[in-house]
Structures are given as structure tokens and as C-alpha cells.
Length: 162
Image (cartoon, rainbow, N blue to C red):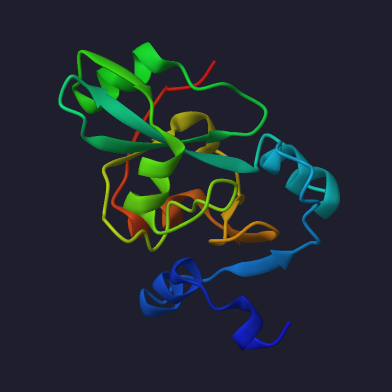
């Protein structure tokens, strides 16, 4: 794929940080709203290494944070709240998530976000040799090591999925 086709804030952040990565693209079906499952199926990767990026609102402050968990699992809101030091959390309004990250839902990446939000990555992925996250748009995934993902995002890790 030509460099101009792959450039996004996410890929630019990886290039700037000199993080080794591989891009994977696929034709996104606009009628499919299960973005992570679609990516895993179309790219042929196990859903346990395909990660979804979820924007969460801390209650009552209204501040936003990011959870990164395998597509094959669900975010445990109580565990996430504990991991980020909040009393309670709720899924963020999609429009607020898009404004804060600079990405559209289904293409939200933990990399290169417009506003740097606190990020927590599920510890279940740390033993994997590689993981895939959104490359900043629907139909684009970035493959990298979990340790590099933690480093480049400044994330903390915790058991936040079930």
C-alpha cells in the first residue's frame, strides 16, 4: 500500500517514535458495526490479539480515559474504574469520544490521539508476541508488540476484561 494511503495520526505517531510495526488493511463493510470482529475475520487473526479501543467517561468528573481490550473479551467497568482510580465509569458518548481522539468510532486508535487521554491496556495481552490495534480508520490495523504499544501510548496495564 502506498505511504499516502496508510498515513494517519496513529501511523505517524509510530513512525515518529521509531516503533516497528506492520500495517494491515481490508475493505470495511459499512453495514458491519462489529469493527474488531470484522477486522479479525477479514485479516485472519485470532480475536484474542485483535484489540478494541474503548473510550470511557469517569463519573462524576466527566473526564475521559481509554481502555484497550481484546475483541474476544468484554471491558469490566468496575475493574477499569479501579485501575484508573475512579469511583465509577461509563462508556463515553460516541461524539465525545470522536472529538477527544480525533478518530471516528470503529477507527479509534490508542495511538496518535488528538488529546492524550489516560490509557489502560488489559494485561491479558502482555504475553502475546504481537497484537493489532486500529490504525486510525476503519479497515486499517497496526500490528506491533504489546510492550511497544504500552511504551508508545504511556499506558498502564491491569486486568480490565472478562
